[in-house]
Length: 379
Image (cartoon, rainbow, N blue to C red; front, top):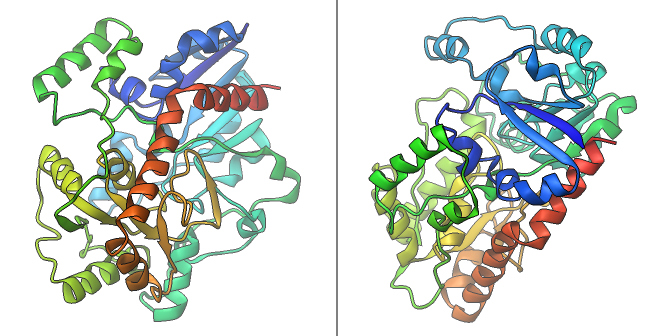
């Protein structure tokens, strides 16, 4: 039996453990134990945490502390030597698997490579040579828009390139598509809070996944579009959010969409997705966003930027199979939108295929993916 301890900044109510990124491990908990892995979660560093065959360190534990968040909000400088911290921890247990949950394939912390066994990232560049390049804002797409439109002043930012001798340490983990997305349409907030309380006192089991969003059929839809985006217009990082600005402006003018930025509650948000034929997406802080997975559950067809340059799982971004993709220069955006609007058969096929990908996460495909991942990083 291989003992694995996971350090994660999750709530004491365990919502993130059982409904977020780690929910797939908990769903298959019995099968994983039968395969020889004992997994425990920690939300603070203790002596007991290091008592394991392998320790999984989650990046957000170190980057999302209250102190760092407060300093960022107040635009205060802060210094945190991650390399030094991980080096110290590696003395106590050298079998460190680093989980980089950064938003983009390009945002990394390769300076810690000498002190870890594997570097697991939720989305990875297909061509690892990209990790030897210096992209503006550490993002492939931000670099593209900065060079094309000169959106920002050149600013200094930290980046450690991937050294050739560490390439085999970089592995693909999984993305937020595995989440146990709560069905707020058929289950109210009271029930959601009760589930949180249950997680505080007891462990969840598979029957609690009945509160997951159900797949809605594509069927007949009477609204062409759903578009709801936080444009982050106050952000100085224009290259990161340029895609959102452009797509929103284009759809407003071409298809007379309005109220794009008006905030609505989550239930209303999902109901609107359930009425729309198409959900048009664009990158935010990274390439993978919650909206596309929610759209898939609600039966809306995804129109999304081409991300064939990255690997991720579950992958609902396969052009002409699970969605239609448009190029970074936006030249094919209108063509892809119209292609779906005039072809109901295609729209329904794309939705069905995307839903099948997500449905398989909690079936044999998902279990095999997790077991293969665990086998790979604990060799």
